[in-house]
Amino acid sequence: MADGPILRALFRVHLWLSARLIPVLVGRRDFEAVLKWAPLDAPTPYRGLPSAYIVTRVNRAVRHPWLMRDRRCLREGLLGFRFLRMAGFDPELRFGVDAKSMHEPRLSAHCWVCLDGKPVVSDSLPDMVEIYRHPGGSQKARAA
Image (cartoon, rainbow, N blue to C red; front, side, top):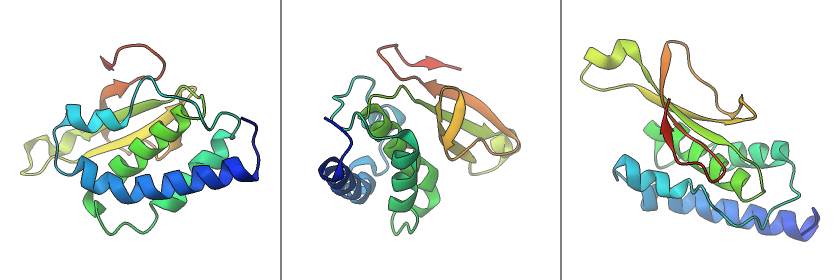
């Protein structure tokens, strides 16, 4: 399907609905269940949309979080990964923890999406140690 106004409208509606549903569907589920929202094999109905357009729309869809405020990067990362895959790209969803928080009551974690090795949705934060990389394509997920 070519990049056009109808494709972009369908994409925006799908993204908007997904952004609203993801807090309910992900909830407080375990990590493995959360990664189901980042499928390695996905149809590509949005092939032809530029990655910059997808990233901009994802950022816009999550800019005022009512739910998942404390996990905004997870919502943004899952949506970015999912919709980049549906456009035919091969993104990586990366997860990291702040080494300083290892001895704190609450672990400080973060996720971001890379395309061709460069961050496109969020970015690694200072003092973050990457602990997991969920690759694109048909490869199996692997620990970093």
